[in-house]
Image (cartoon, rainbow, N blue to C red; front, side):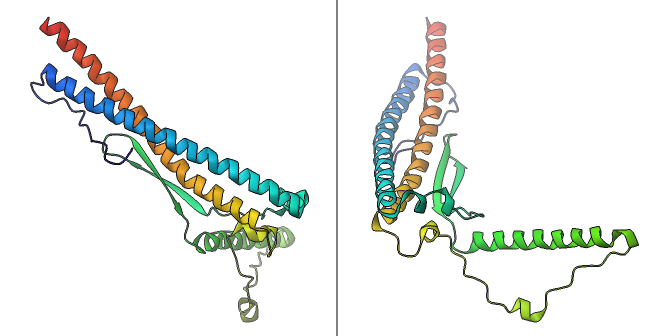
Length: 216
C-alpha cells in the first residue's frame, strides 16, 4: 500500500446513507489510483534492475569465461541471504517485507543439521556391520583433538563461490539483483493491496445499488 493511503473500514455503519456510501467509494477509488501509480513505478524500477543485473552478469562471463560463472560454482548447501516475511494489514490485505538474514545464523543451523545427519549415518553403519552378532556399538565420540580442529570459515557471500578477486561487474550484478529482491516485496504488497481494494469497492458498489433499489 502506498504511503499516506487512507484506511477504509469495511464494516458498514448503522444507518449509513447513500451519501456516506459515495464518500467511501471515492476514498477507495483514490487509494486504488495511488496504488496503481506506485505499482507502475515499482515495476519499472524492478525491470530496470533486472536488466542491469543480467547485463553485468554477461560482462562477467565474458571477462572470466562461461565456465567460471555458471552453476558449476554453486555450493552443495545454500542458505538464503534474504528472508521474506508476510503480515496482515489493517485493511485485510497482506504486506510483504524483505530483510537480510543474520550473518552466520543460517550457516550454524545448516552445520548442526549436517552434523546430525553424519551421526545418524555412522550409527546406521555400525548396525549393518554388527547386526549379525546382535551387538550394537555406539559410534565413538569425537576426541578432544578432533573438537579442537579449526573449522573452515563459513561465508554466505555468493561472490566467494566464483573466486576471491572477482570483477566489478559481478559485484554490480549482485547489487542489482539484491535491490530487485527488496523491490519485489514492495510490488507483491502493492498487488495485494490493489486486489483487496477492488474487492472492497465491488462490495460497496453492490451495497449502493441495493440502497438505490430500496429507496426507489
